[in-house]
Image 1 (tube, rainbow, N blue to C red):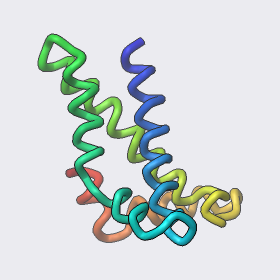
Image 2: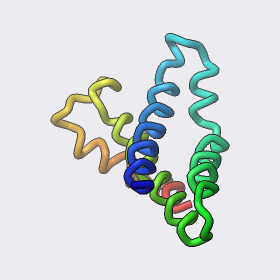
Image 3: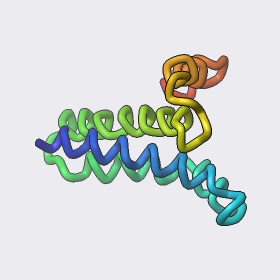
Image 4: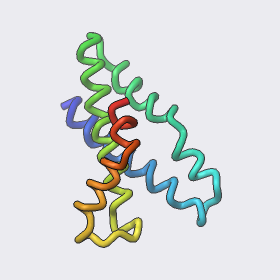
Length: 108
């Protein structure tokens, strides 16, 4: 059950982070800055992991929350909410994930 909650929370976090960053014209430049800060992403994994007693389970839960967060972030980037037609989602998602520098950031 903890992993399911982590997956859902991670996906929502990533999508919300990207959405917040894209609203800078409407809400101000602070939204783009807040969206690009890495600390909330680190806190997300840490908060999930600190709910566990065993180190291996904490690591697994931290990974189980951050991977869906990345998927949520990239999914929102390629969504109709960002003016990308739904028919182009697959190609957009592939491009965003595989641009020269993103695989290194994802791996990191």
